Length: 202
Image 1: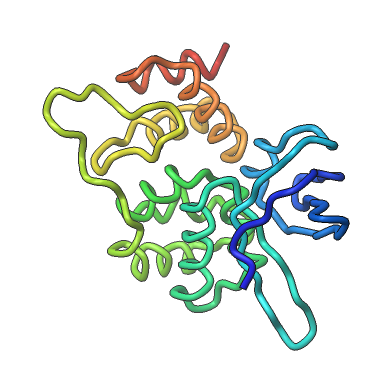
Image 2: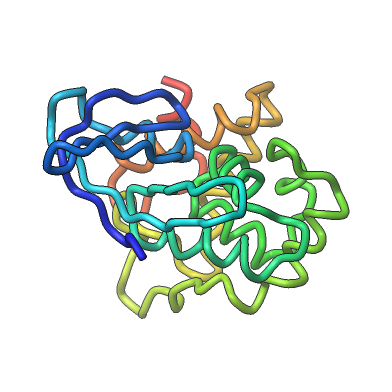
């Protein structure tokens, strides 16, 4: 089982990266959220991977973080009716923190906006994964927020609230989630939902 790949990025599209490892080129299917973090072609890249073997295909899926790969495996192995392609589409529509928050909150309406996901599938996601999403414990007393890029703590709805606010302003879900993630990287620890929205709109 190939669980990690490190080499030179030869080329990339929003849904695929080709990585040279010791003279062999590996085509790796990736979500848009991973494609956004890839370096320029010719530079070194590391991906956490999962190989999926079918009778008619052998596909390698890659992710920027190990937690994203593990969540992808959770989607494909624990939720009936969700295969690798649909799981990749879901993870291209929303970042992992947003997906975890939506599932934990039973927010089927937000999940249903992901590509290829209807209301019934979204509700099944919430039902089957609510106790498995692995949200970290809530921040301990004295902490003010979530470090940039880290998964949000249980009960911390700043990301999902900011995404919802941008959607209400006319953003598409994917664009709103991407804008909020970028705002979170720029914001100071403890930034409020309103501050994240203002930063995302700049």
